[in-house]
Length: 364
Ligand SMILES: Cc1cc2nc3c(=O)[nH]c(=O)nc-3n(C[C@H](O)[C@H](O)[C@H](O)COP(=O)(O)O)c2cc1C
Image 1: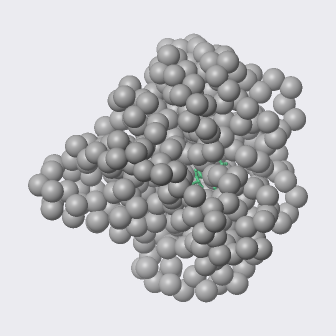
Image 2: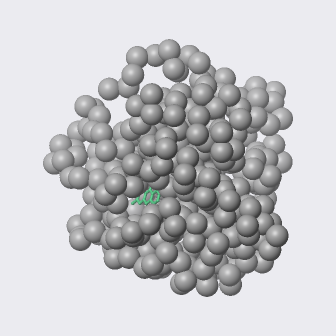
Image 3: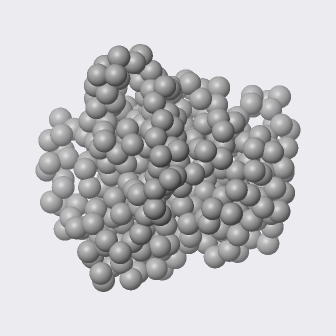
């Protein structure tokens, strides 16, 4: 049924403006009959940050920015869904067009700029589904015109603590001017200290909520030393590696859209993001688990991320090109890989290639 929907909708999706296609997908998910998801094989379950993920394949931030359809997405097979980025006040984002497909590269460039309904509306939606179960993370960011960006993150922790399974502190979107500067050691240290303090403040009423840090794949290795150092010192619960890239790999074929300003995602991001993941893994020294994002669109790319250091996976652009069937395809391939290797969990594969990857030449 899902496969059929995918096949029928793909030509339509291509014909539509990318933002209209996205709005249509959200609408379809809203009105989709809620069939129960198939139960995941036990060996695909992952324990991390004190949570049990039924399988490691999550939906990355940006698809369900406003938490309109997390339960439909969980039912379609995702092991977890990250909603957002949410900012305290609603925001329109950048002028359109701001989303571009690089069809033959299987990539996307976006400069949406945190368009979202704002904390109050999104909180109401999440409060309504609060007892529905499933892991729904909340990705938080600052308003573009905020005068105190750190305060924005603190307020969002307070607002969402009771309804979030975990938080992602997004300091890596390229589309809010200056946001990535929050990755500089001193500012990051201040930001994480205040965010983690807010998390402690709300703990008695909301329970202990994991806080993850999502970084850009464009950090230099010296910056990455600092970022991982600060993350370890402040004891964040994990990191997501990573967001979209402002770089344009030489391999891109779609020369015209490649010139658009914004963050590149999908297949052309795979090599860079996998390298930065491995570099993060060797620096984190198992102090916390990592979530991989960047070009995951098959069982092979998922396994490569796990071997580079990922405990959990997230994808977005793979969904655009491969359809929702990609989620169960990855799960089946992971199960087959476990069987072949006579393993009963993915944990023993995590980071097995990290050292070798960091010894390679830098992806061009
Ligand atoms: C259209 C679009 C919107 C996105 N919006 C967000 C966002 O709001 N917050 C965020 O942290 N990441 C956002 N991302 C980045 C994704 O979460 C992910 O980190 C990145 O796209 C790499 O994964 P992928 O190659 O599987 O797409 C967005 C990506 C795309 C393509």
